[in-house]
Length: 330
Ligand SMILES: NC(=O)c1ccc[n+]([C@@H]2O[C@H](COP(=O)([O-])OP(=O)(O)OC[C@H]3O[C@@H](n4cnc5c(N)ncnc54)[C@H](OP(=O)(O)O)[C@@H]3O)[C@@H](O)[C@H]2O)c1
Image (cartoon, rainbow, N blue to C red):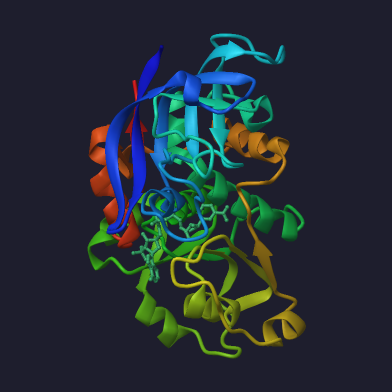
């Protein structure tokens, strides 16, 4: 019986506990592709799954990890061949399907894309679902703005030292936007500047600059992962025709707004889902990262082993993570 190493979350009366165990390949679910995982990455949702947060993963014990890049070892789909490098993100991976925090996954081939040439395995998971979400956000904003690009625009990114936020800052800056980064981490101004932010403000400063229900027109574009009061403030400060792409809820699931930004300024709130969208949309973003959107992620990434992951999971749940955590399963 072939076994492999994986992080496992187990439900107990005192909450979920994490351990590194040996699992059997035979216990993996059905699927056309058996993949030897080379890298995964840590996202906020992984931490929710690992800690047993309600509404994320139904059945424990469970191996989280919504992201994986690896090599196809067995395939029942002729569109893939043994030895292919593939990326799998989202759908049910790491939710109720054994995920990327294990050395093997078995998944439907409809979840996998070939790693585009020009993108390394390491960089694909340095980006991971966070990067995919930042990319989808920027694409949605550009589409809303009739694909006129970001030159001479002002944009604002919240949760800017986190996974989605930090990559959104880099990407908007690379595409020519002047980026305001909102952060709760006073000590990370240097990092945000190095990512390309032109202005760095605290959450409190944002509430001084922006007025509800409708305030000064400041930004063309927003990328928000926080929701709550922060999203309320962003919507009240957009320029005419501007939009916010929202993907997260680290500040809570609800927010208040008024009709004014929508009917006086033609603003829009664009919802971003990186999980269940068609595979082709994901591939498009990966191809962009392999070409026009190439980023130097070296300053942003902390590389860990499976054994070092538990500490990082606690940090991300506390909102303390900076940049991206790459999980090396080589
Ligand atoms: N829709 C989708 O498909 C999708 C995909 C990926 C992620 N998400 C969601 O997006 C959010 C961010 O994910 P992530 O992986 O980037 O997480 P992350 O790395 O933990 O980043 C979140 C950042 O938000 C800020 N933050 C944390 N708690 C906050 C609070 N209470 N109020 C205001 N700001 C706070 C922190 O940055 P600062 O200290 O710099 O402010 C933190 O680093 C999560 O809610 C996640 O579930 C959704």
